[in-house]
Structure formats: structure tokens, C-alpha cells
Image (cartoon, rainbow, N blue to C red; front, side):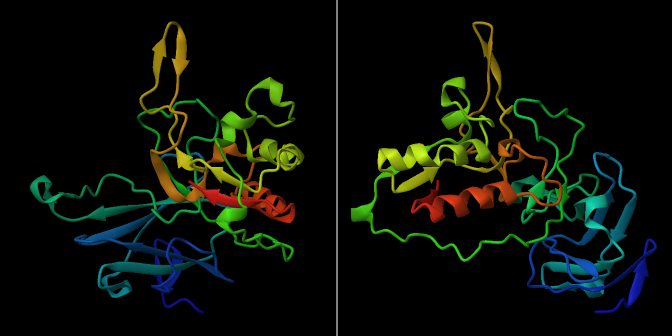
Length: 265
């Protein structure tokens, strides 16, 4: 594809409307966002870990079909930016309409979310959630799920962090996808055929944090999900900038390779 216009110094063209999120293309990034009731939309581009955008790209009205805005932006290096949106529209709380064109909004289809990658470190009230663009280039090496019947299944429900966080687990990377991977031989020795993972997507463990008898208690389970397409970055042992999900996918592949099915809670 080739550019058709320029916005804020960036070559652009109408996007591919049925590609949700922000998948990278050969020579650009396709940004697509749905809004019900929105009257205008802006794409915000941030340098890594910055709160003020270095570029604001309003979506032309011609780049909208129905309730969907879509735009390809050329000349972006995915390792050098984060993104969010701003939407304008009616303010009518009685109808559930809470548009505020000053507030950056997270892409609900984000494959990677910034802002809280260290377990238990609280985001400040000024910090914003941003999204990163992720390449979908993981090598599954022709490994497929075992596809066991329920009658054949022995299911172990587990919490990714809780399963290996205690020193007694004996793993090198406690509380992470990598730590769980180290315990695959243990699971096989138990005769486990299926692991059911409690929520593994990005969530805020500091939400509703409290102190009881001098001990800080955090939200452990993860049911207050921030993004349903982004693995929890604090569950990764490695820094996965723009490759978020690699460690989680590796865990899934290795479990399947060892004959263990995976269910996501």
C-alpha cells in the first residue's frame, strides 16, 4: 500500500477496517478502533514511558465506516513508540455516554500494555495505560494441543504467580511463565493432563490494595482485567518489548509438547 495523505508529518491512508488493534504491516501500522456514539477520534503516539504524545493524528472523517475508524500510518518503527486514542462525543451519564476528548484511552485490542510491568509497583494517578505494537511471528514448531477428552483429563487449576512464587518451588524464575515451565516435569510426575490457568491477562494487582497487621495485601487473582488480548507483563521473566506474549506462548508450546492441555480461566 502507498500513502494518500499526510497528517502531522506522517504519511497515511485509509486502513484495513476489519483488522482490529494495531497490527504491523510491511511498510506501516494499521490502527483500527471502534466507537459507538463517538464524533471524532485522534491517534496519540508517545515515546516510550512518556506521558505527553509526540504526535497527534486526527482521523479524517473519510477514514471512518459506520462506527469504525481505521488508518495506516507509514514510517513508524514499532520499537520506538506507544499509542493510545482520544475520542470526542456526547456527555450524558444517564445514557452511559461519558465521552471526554481530553482523556487518553487504551486500545481494547492491544496485544501489549505498558504501565505496570513490575509486580506490586503501583501506578501513579498521572500514569496512563498505553499500548505497544507486537509482531505475530512466534514459531509454534508444528506443536499442537493434545485434544484430550474430559474423561481422560486430570485438571490442575493454578495461579501463574502463586504456583512458583514461594522459594520452596525451587525455580530460577519464581512467579512467572518461565517458572511454571520449569515445573513441567513435576506436573507430568503427578499425572496431570491439563492445566487450567487463572487469569493471565494484564490486570492491576494494586487495585484495592490494603494493609492488614502490617502486611500489604494485593489483588492476586486477576479478574479485574485491563486488556483481554495482552498477557500480564509482570508474569514474564524476560523484558519483552514489542515481543510481549513470547514467554507465554513458549509455555503453551512446551506444555503441549509434553502432552499437557491448557485451559484459560
